[in-house]
Image (cartoon, rainbow, N blue to C red; front, side, top):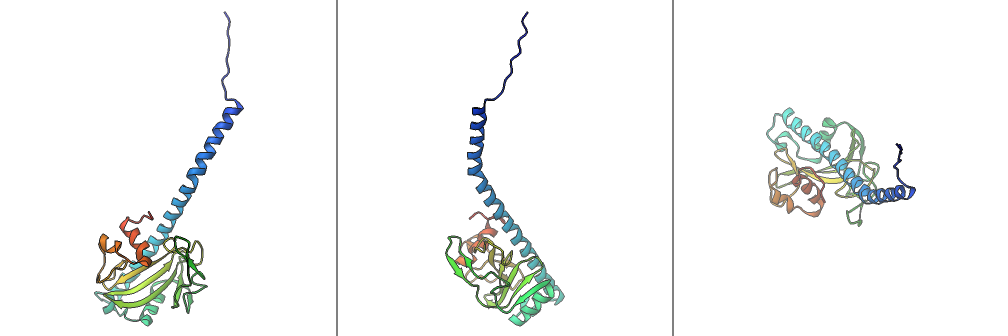
Length: 212
């Protein structure tokens, strides 16, 4: 009786073809995966700042035994400066929003440059976020918080790492909409937000996902 043994394996050509297919698939999927990871990272940082700011505004009202931000005394840029220094760990202050608090320039998602941030007193907090708060009493929107979630670090693109958030008189944070006097906004009101507010509005509407 003959006892034969056969060995099975892959030829060099088969291995090379397999590696080629893996390479093509990786080239197609890895950039998309990296982009999704980066977007989620930006949203996570934004959500962290959102929570920190929400808690600070709540403590501010509680400490003042007030029912809203106006009653608590947040009625000027001078009061806003005191709020920032008392309720955040500020590691750097800037007379304007320009460097070193914010980056020297920013771009839109389509790559078009936006130039420098408008001049106003700005801060860098312990998390590394750069903040330019601006008192703007308009239809119960008390403060506009411009935030670059990672300071001067890239990509410095509006809607990726820089956003604008409105603090309403009731102490809640949201986007901006015409003639809206209190937060939270409806989905339709957020959809009507102006371009500079649209990114944050879309993230809120998409349940803290950056889908654009």
